[in-house]
Length: 539
Image 1 (cartoon, rainbow, N blue to C red):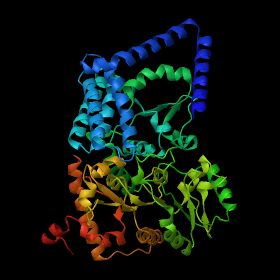
Image 2 (image 1 turned 180 degrees about the horizontal axis):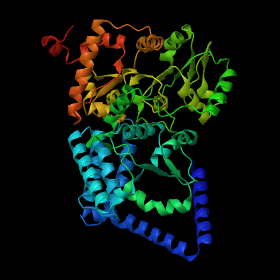
Image 3 (image 1 turned 60 degrees about the vertical axis):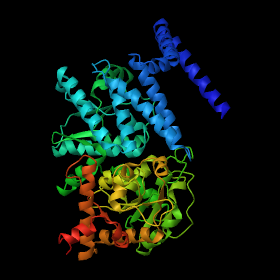
Image 4 (image 1 turned 180 degrees about the vertical axis):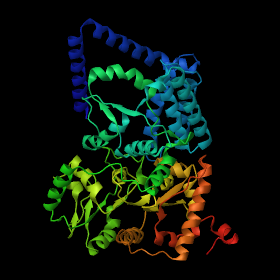
């Protein structure tokens, strides 16, 4: 590892020398100034924060440093809760100091960075009251600046670079943003992404599919010209949206926008290209799948896919072995199963009509997209690959779903079963309302569950098999739900409406059905059940 770091450092140094050689004295002094500023921050920023100096850059520097340390703490097993909370509090104080000042056009980028960092921290804590206050302040400040300087007259907006560089699941916020504009429930503007050609997108082929809706600028000279505008007009894609002139947190709008889109009978935003369609089926032919066959995609998240084995997201991982009976259910029905994921995942046992595509030499960006777009339905876990299937209009079955707030992301075309939680040492599970309400409902790191002494229970193989069987019935048009099933689903939906109020939102409700077998089995966890029966809702 040390040799690797030295190699990277040497490469970076050579790159700097080349830039200075090509750019001359101007570039040299610019880099020297940046170096001196960095050294000044390194030495003086801790003092500035300690003695409460009025130096915005110092608070951003220390806040960023604390954020990195906080992420490291959350990723360690058995991290002390008090240590995590202490670092979080220090980080919040730094970023709050930044947003105390009203920004101008020159400082809005740093101000927005601090605001979004605070939003992430409050979401992490499940503190919806503080989150709502920061979101409202962010929207007000941003709106005033844009209007005051006539930036709204440009009729354009920029999307964050992390859309193309981060996890693939971030694209679902772009999907929601574009759909909302087409539906007329948010302002529709020209959407621009500035992408340096030296930077590789997370899936360049997938990004090309979005060129229909966004303009991707890769010319360095034009990027330099537009960057000042991007600093002021980058939309808070994953933070909040303005729908029908009302500010709503982005994670709660996903299902609402998707459901309205589907209810109006609109076609999917994305459709597979003719070229990818032909190449995809030719590739499947090599596995023995014909064009008259159908298949289901299966993606079960495992640890280590980011290149590490930290415990920060253990609760999102699952054991592929618990999906074997569900796989057999699909193949017995005449379908094929294509296991998605990254190379190096636990190999699937060889079986008829089952393809371990994750460990296949034919794996490619284009084939990833083809499979997600053409499968009959997609079986997913708490990982972003399922969002590709949704963008192409494919129903999803979400298993081992956690955090529970992800229930709000889905549509009436979809099914899900959540992971259950319980206090360690106790026999009973948290009820569904406790599971969905903040802070447990938004718990996105393992440390949050550990801090509250909560154990996370993986779905059992029979439960996974049952919800997959239910989707097989739905996809063939042979599904029948009884009165008791409908009653339980109604109780669940009404409960999610009540939980939506705890998130600071009105009329937010889940659209997807919880798996029939799973809900029957755990009907006792419906905390509203007794209330509904007393009010005569049972039917």
